Image (cartoon, rainbow, N blue to C red):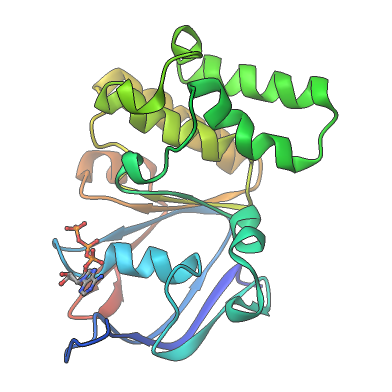
Length: 219
Ligand SMILES: Nc1ncnc2c1ncn2[C@@H]1O[C@H](COP(=O)(O)OP(=O)(O)OP(=O)(O)O)[C@@H](O)[C@H]1O
């Protein structure tokens, strides 16, 4: 069964005459890396906001694990789809780096020592340990990106939805991210990768979808 199913989904921003997405029928699976490409303004971020329930289709419906997205709360969706925003500044809201990661982990219902270990591991993996007590918005662009990724990855959702995750990362950190994606796939989970980074896509994508004129074209 598809993890996410879009049925005849169209979306038009209020007050706009032209829909951003038109009559989309698409199945997304929680395995492999589905890369979504498209020119600036083609609707990739709009699409991710629809998948995560931040926006609601103007027409059509979206199902997550067989349940209508509109019947789920944003928190319920968030436990199944880990969304890393294009702009980390819109995602980071805690006082320290450690708290930023701990915030979501705390709600996983793990015993405290396991939760603390998870926070330590992901902080360590993304080389954020020395910044543990730093204010997230004071970090460099690449560090903020790594923190936004770490905070979502720590929750181990069935599907990761990553909007331009390599922006601001140096080549070594891109490789570290890619290695993490390999681990995610190895654990039987999936990734949707929205990106303009052709080299990263070529290396990691297992399925390629282009967004043009409001429609998806399988490549
Ligand atoms: N809140 C909004 N109200 C009206 N129009 C919007 C809004 N947000 C986005 N748009 C428009 O919708 C279209 C799709 O935008 P979107 O951000 O989804 O594109 P994108 O493919 O993610 O672009 P990029 O590659 O530049 O990140 C654009 O024409 C944009 O101007």
